[in-house]
Image 1 (cartoon, rainbow, N blue to C red):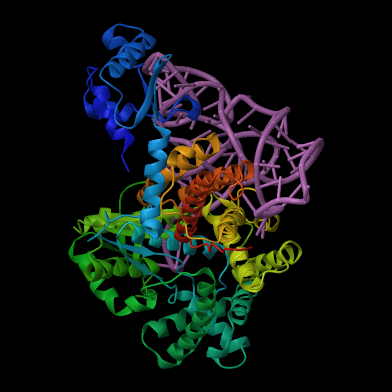
Image 2 (cartoon, rainbow, N blue to C red):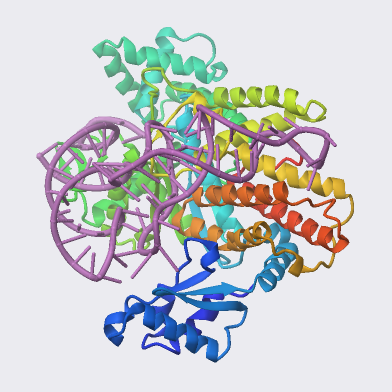
Length: 562
RNA sequence: CGGCCCGUAGCUCAGUGGAUAGAGCGACUGCCUUCUAAGCAGUGGGUCGGAGGUUCGAAUCCUCCCGGGCCGGCCA
């Protein structure tokens, strides 16, 4: 596919006292497709050339026309201070649609990541705490970034940095020994969660003290403490894996906080040797002497470690293990300072790869607290969405044979898509009403469009035509489909660069919208003319393909019927 | 007290230097004997939190202020 923007740059620069880089920076997309596909604004040249910008635009347009339209363009028009360029619809339809056909499942992907490694730390739930709707964000954002990078040729490494160590286990052991029943490995997360909540509701001071002692015993390798801990960990992992199966999320490593226990001393030692730490009341701290960063605590005065110690050890370990080009922390915004402190520490320790680390931050979900017990369990949300889809399906498509499977795909897809369809950083108010609404800009809308397109292809019943006449795809609706299809590769790249899956979700809404308008307005099967039917079938297949590719990147299923 | 993030239509959000600020939900009007109405076409709805500034041009960049959220050495 030609890059129309690149073709335009030299063609414009030849006529102006600007170099190609300056021209490239100014080229933009007009707000309305009727104005053209690309535009060049002439405002800046006005002073330099001592002419009005409309006059410059007029001369530029004439100059370009005189030497012949740039390859692939059908018109060049001065409109006020802008020069608008329109690409040849037929040529573009042929090139875009052919690219989708040839590359099919790979359309939008690439090889620019080959030889590069991205390590992504995501999901990372805490053992013995319910997998809440809050963990959904990290899990699905990280999962999407993993697939997007792989699609572009990166070697991706997904790490589930389990919260499986820390003082909360001292509390849990204390609560379990006091109130718990049965074997530790037979506890459900719900049981453990209740113990945790109970500990926080009526806690005499001596229990807090006991909890600290149990944590210390764990750190010292005390077998009684570790046996309880292993049981809790095992019980939790089984429940987590059930959820990851539903979401279709996978990890290459489950190295959680406990994995780094035998690596903490070396990490601390390296920091001390680098001269970045100091002692304070028996604790080991790093004082950044900076308002934004404050002070980082690396080791408590009783010698116990903290999450900061473990995060430092993890970063050092990951570097040795993977030599990554990017290390993404898909972690909530509340930990922004903590991660900034980690990155700055790495810099001060002389680890020159510190700037390959990035905090992929996301907004807080309001209305829930694990301590107060108002948490919304993710599994309940997924099940409720699935049930609702089943009801809708029973009314609208009762003959569908694999209703349970499709209900699950659409219900889970709705939840995942809803989470990925807003910019990461925005805070999030959980609302049943909103998350269970499947109309408009939702996952089910995109899935439905995909299913409708599949339905047309089923009715067609033959192979997708090998040749077709692209000049027949010229209605505004068809041209709009082509225009949006063309953008997919750029959107995927931008999503990877900015670590923003919502760009893809947003794009899919747009693609589904133009696809819906197209097949609502124009008949495909009974279009009359055989050539026209063939051309439209080819377009339908291309739309179907790109919707499927995009949904796949987000981890949302694309059922063929619903 | 300090640092970071957010503030766009009644609600949920796109848009981060360019042409009349866009969607969806909700409301209202049409469209199912025609490829699935989870759809399509249309109507109504906005001092882009406020005030200055930079610029030919600001929702977008800078400063200050207001409102909300988060973080701020022995939790994660």
